Image 1 (cartoon, rainbow, N blue to C red):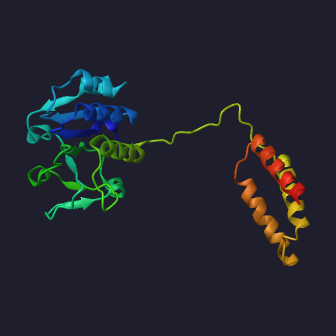
Image 2: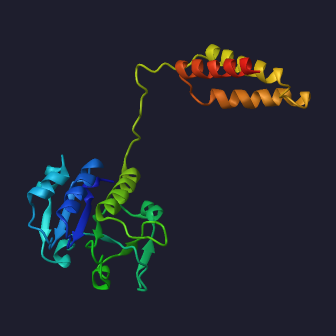
Image 3: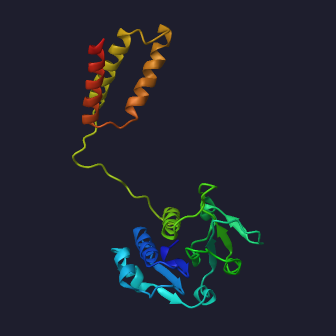
Amino acid sequence: MSKKNISFILHKPQLSENIGACARALKNFDFKNLVLINPKPIYPNDKILATSVGAKTVIKKSKEYHNLEKAIENIDIVIATSARFRNKNIKHINLEDLKKIDFKKKVAFLFGSEASGLSNNEISYANYTLQIPTNPSFKSLNLSHSLIIIAQHVANIIKTKNLIFKKSNKVKSASKKEIQSMVNLCVRNLDSINFFKPKEKKPIMLENLRNIFYKMDLSDKETRILSSVFASLGKKR
């Protein structure tokens, strides 16, 4: 699967700021294919470029068409976004259903204008309609917000390998000895207030406490902070 096969089509966008923000959203998730159909503002313009921030390359590579039919003639699957359920003979899907889409084919996500969205005529060109789950009493999403939600979701589906997030070199994981010392301090304070009742359940309660602290992946600093908290609570009594 490749991001090169995926296009994002803005049908009659009205605001320069939204066009620029959409370009920026695409670059956030390393998509490159932006398509515009009859944009209302002059395209491109200074406001679009300014709003796109570092995504001017996306705008430079973008394509502009005068009608939807021409824009999708080389597309295999068109997914139209809509906040409204359409009573048409077309399959409605949600974000999770995108996992079933064959992204080896050329796929385009179609977005309507800010004022009116997509008409039934424009929807008729689509293979699917996609609705982003929102507050039922307030479904309207900003154009760029809708696009970035879908872009992030699709990027997550098609990525070939997971990104490995490493801790900062300044963060040192707590040793087992440090964690156990903290746990022992916690247990001593709990013992002093007769927390472990009934006594026969103390072993399993201790197991549960250890499970909590050990799976937290604490740093040595966090362990020292918690030890200080437990020590202070003991002094309060």
